[in-house]
Image (cartoon, rainbow, N blue to C red; front, side, top):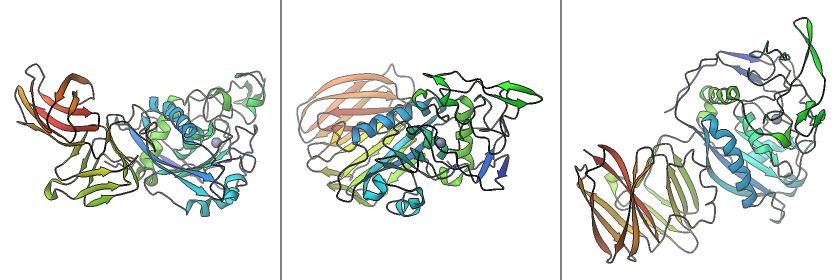
Length: 450
Ligand SMILES: [Zn+2]
């Protein structure tokens, strides 16, 4: 469900200010000052649900398809690390996909003025577009183009910049930002100056150059409130320039990002929706879909309306359940597959280890053709009807609404059509999800215990 938060105030930037140039070649960021700064009251009514942001990654290559800026394994490492930094702040990611853009100039000698042409290649209205270039550009290792933003570039040579640039996309300013006024080391002005976040200590441009490892060794002061105050910059903060020392966003930064999403229509458009119904479609190529609650593949009112054939490579991840209704056809061939995962929205970055060559929870032409339960709702005993193309050992796993595994039962399916009795008088009343796992794939059914 979308909600639109009106920011407390919008401070417009009155004069053009040049972006701060990188102090460290591997860590610099060319993100300009925001065109306007969103300011929020300290007590916003934020959603308790995770803010699940969809991202799409574009890997630049040279004209001839060589010199990919980043391989998939390194991309995964970067995205996993990024997701880990955001997860404590109730912000998660759905990885919608990855493509290649072959342009030597943009890969190795990019100028940020080309972002319009670059962004026109394969833009996403439902995901933040992240471009990965082989080399740094214009003295920096990354650029989010505005704050907030629906797109950003990172240089593969500045691999810590995924979390930093996406932070800009979600409304964060540099900790050393001063363009609206300097924040004082004693904290005064923290809500209206500096980075507009009060639990990030005041910082100044270049503080990372006065260092011993990740310890600040400088003695820089600023005159605030009539006295010289010494800086104690946040050397582990992702929005600082202490790139090798990044360890966290502050709680205030997490709140600011969630407030920014609430207040920004184009970021709302990039959130994973609560529920999805996929219907009336023949799916080919690659598709990755997430939903915070449920995904229904096929339409009960018009069974038989979804087919995933041939080179389909589909990935579906829901917070609670995925329902394959009768008539859904899933017959990918060769190395292609369909993956169904449940309750992983904030557990890990969606699909990090599965894209694009997957072998987990695979459903293929040897797969499960039916999983039916009756009665449903049930009181104590449940009949599970299973149809497999290739019989063999399988596992029935029962999960509660929170995704906790309640019961696991190993079964032997000896015929194509098999019925299993489950006696579940001990279960508390409520909603459960039954997953059948078999060598050829998995399927799920939603149960109601009375
Ligand atoms: Zn930056």
